[in-house]
Image (cartoon, rainbow, N blue to C red; front, top):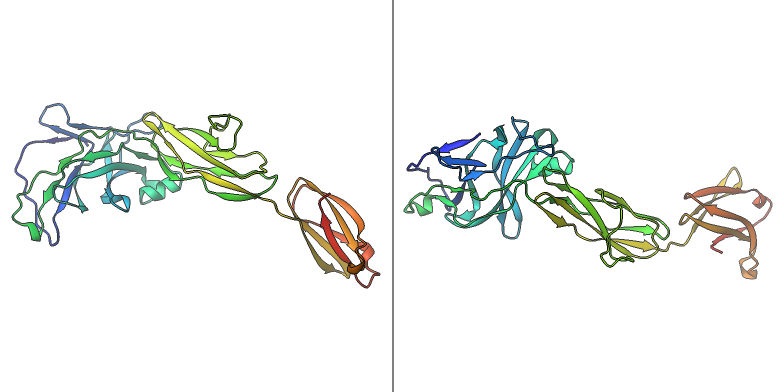
Length: 321
């Protein structure tokens, strides 16, 4: 809703506790018929301006040590990309103090909070990060002598802001010869592009050609490799954290059980290798006999040694030739 504000003397009710900085939370503010001092309509990735209670907006303020924290309550959109304006107190900002703020919006069907909606992959948008040098004040019981001032306006607010990373690529371990599946989740409200990079590369810029989605599956890996992604929109770009994929050289594991009186063996090891299964009836003699060769394309593989039924003892091992 566009808000036309006239000059007035504002009286704030006092509350117990320390006085808090205040902000007038609105993305459209104009005095009488003058040019608006705040005009930042929100729209979706199709360029359509948000309208109706299906979308809400909430103010976030920067709290030292905790990052951006939600303040006030989510407010619905009215029409034409503008949400209902109201005064918001910032409990961690002293009266008149400075604060960094951001406006975050989301589709209500995605969750009750911005974080829930963003993690669920629902539409969510963010404004630029705005520095407010002086907040207004609503004096509390301990500062009743301070004259009240108008809440600060979000002058300079712009939409969209650079993408906000919701979930970074995660470090993981894979067996040698296997690939890894990496993903990133970001919100900005408008169309985003992706470009993945890796730190072991034959390119000086570390760019991975063709890796331009939010999900990237690596080729087979034999050495530890770090991956990261750049996400960009019309307002700017952001880099994710680096996710280290650790390559583990795992020896094959051979498990022996009895099934209907027969030796049942299960081989679990890195796929893509050919293994030689050997047996011995006397460990002290070190006379291993080749039982079969096995190319492992999936793991584990189970097989029966039918020749073991008439021997008092039989030992097995798996060997990578």
